[in-house]
Amino acid sequence: MLNIISAFGLAGSAGVNAYIPLFIVALAAHYPLNDPFIKLQAPYDAIGSWWAIMIIAFFLIIEMLADKVPAVDTVNDGIQTFIRPAAGALLFAASANILTDIHPALSLTAGLLTAGSVHAVKSTARPVVTAATGGTGNWAVSLVEDAMAVVMTLLAIFVPALAGLMLIVIAFMVYRLVRRWRRRRNPVFA
Image 1 (cartoon, rainbow, N blue to C red):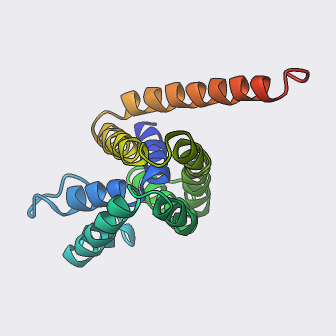
Image 2 (cartoon, rainbow, N blue to C red):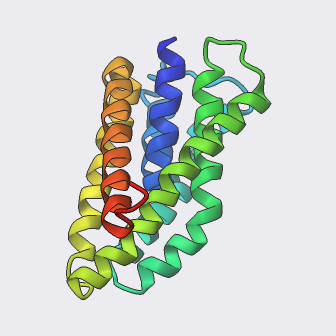
């Protein structure tokens, strides 16, 4: 059960930043060299190879820089519309496949939907932040998102139950914010 919670945590984190959870999982699957912390089964074990770590690190740097610049972050979110859900699907399937017998198609779909949903919320909220702050708040919001992705990834790996609780709290907060926003927009139907 904890592997499934961990899988949801990793996929949710990938919806915010695809490369942070991929990088952390890749490092955990590679180090220590003689006995990696995470043992991924084939074909997911390729994530822990040195060349995969280098490629992920390269794209992580680009993502982190692009996400801090107004207008560039909107273009980046458009590009990431395909990458974040795919990363979530890959991470969900890799972590769910460690000890469970969940069909890979179900794992990939669950990861895709989880990361895609988180990405949709993020990419919808970011233009509002840009408009409200004139672009000056983007770097701060991006840093908070990056920190959340790191914390969620580490919790999903080391303390999955706490990651599950964090996901529930975040989902509840998003639900309340959306509900409050709808009431303000259209008080007749709220």
